[in-house]
Image (cartoon, rainbow, N blue to C red; front, side, top):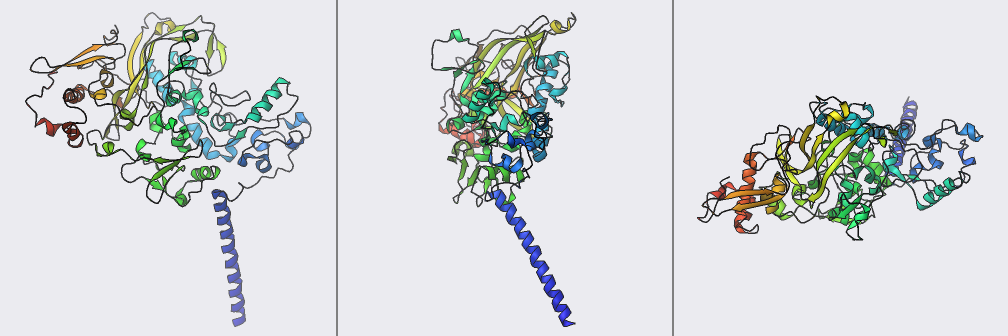
Length: 628
């Protein structure tokens, strides 16, 4: 009996060791794969693929998309067992990664990422469609959800097809070649396709000689996203990409230039003037150094507008006291893979995490002294992330003012747009269906200018936040030109939009540039003077632009000068508005104080910490407050 028990004990002991060993091996294999000790993912049997019979000695693949590991048909499909070219190429996808084939190509391995992309605003363009339909009077709110692929041929839909529907991930990439300034769409390729110089040269040779000599260098599919990948789409509309680089679009033609160094012509022929680059761009940082995969690809939710999909805030990196962090062991799978592919080695350090949704910034870490650092995805350089300045950290009066409101150098301002339909235009082009058409909407723009942005008020989660605002749609729409219905009259819109200009500078805007500046408050450009010639003060505003006959406001204005506005709709968003009359007067009250008191003075510094009201109880006899 004892011998039997002894044998069972030994068997259980051996079995236990085997189980522990198996678990240990699995854990070690997983951990080594994530930390980069392993050469990559599990291999796929590629021995039977016939592709390499013709496509021999090709190079250029990324480490984790090498055909030695995943084969050729994982991406390109086709018949891997056929030897004859025609048979082998049956069902082959020459350009995998377009959303039309992503379910069968990229999505087989990256199902989660594909799900997110399909729901992202870069694919649906929901906000773009919603605002356009609202402005054209085809919807009673800009907050409905749409998908750009569902556009029909209403006035708003045709307007989008003619002028806007080029920039969405569903647009097909049909030609071989690298991503450039003119690229639009392409699904996964839009961000992840990279051509080496050798791959470009081989492709040119392949095309020049009619496909006789197959390229030896293959483009890489990887996570090394450059700013060029963003440029094609994000250099339009609010022009974030060009702003970030410091360039402001003009209405100049090539013949207008006389060789000035301050101008640059981009690949599509547009001419820009240099206004000052973003401080992060000056440091050599890429767009994805801040906007990681979690924001770029989205989180799988259907958002109405872009600001709702962006969770990153300046204070996530430039924190005030203690940052929000995450450890390596708590990283999600997507972040672990980025960590692996980037070959980072700071597993032992905490990383910054975005406060709003908790997603990690894996290219950051905290050192032993609590200092935050960022590893640039551009050149691998490590940058010290500075905390909030003492002025920002102690300023209680502006705690509801966004960082960008004060730290933005400049923002583009586009006004006076007239939109009409020319049914006989033979140069029309449907950007959604990619075909030439007769008849299109045409925009006539009056002025492109540049200035510090205006300010607007957003209500979010019960909080009142001051954010930058720019003219979004100061425009007339000639509805009759499209419908040919004489009862369908023109509509006029004076709508500003919330904006993140991406022209950040270390130096903040001057106090007067907010509190005594007509553009900032929403009156438009012009001369704002505080007249104290009498016993009381009076603000006098002389606009730079003539009044628009549709509403008698200056062409570039958002609201009337110190009057209650007649308009009911002010913005392209339902949660964003201009300053109300009471708020305007409060802002100008500080502006009146700044006429005598310098911003560095003791009394003005006290207003930052204590607010304005306590100091109004200690007015000097020399103080002249505004009557209006």
